[in-house]
Image (cartoon, rainbow, N blue to C red; front, top):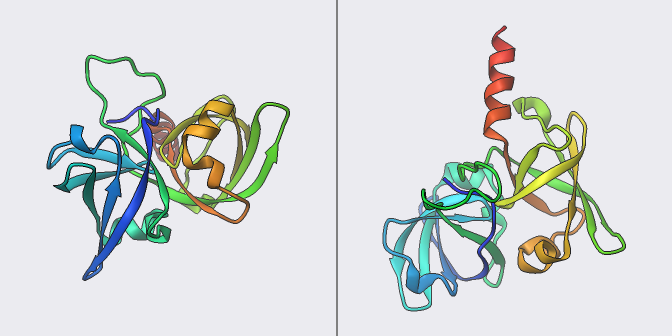
Length: 195
């Protein structure tokens, strides 16, 4: 379980193929606080730590994960948003995030405003995922508030802190991002579909 509040940016330092799996080595200031078998969200994707060094760790993404996320687009040098799993005795600052990416979206607008940024993302609505204005959505693991919602697009506004401390500052029009839709909204949509 995660909150969508990014702890740090990390860098991919190595990628190794093994069958249909990709092993990512990640250099991060959090590495010395991690342990083998711990869950860490990478751009919102929950992956298990399988190896550790003093300043880096390795995680594995299987084919299913690579097909549903933007992790297959990562290269050595790519920056990823990291969040460790939530402590049960802590505050839930963002919203309930599982680290299970529902699908990807493409950035169709990036506009610098006077003190903030607007991003608009387009996704395939055939999966039944929806957003609502003032609802929550997770983009590359970042808990964000939806400000404009349509059937297959939504907009978010980004404050300077989030822009500077996540990889959103590297997202441009045409880039692919990971989406995790609000879990409560997914349950409501599923139940309404049965009615």
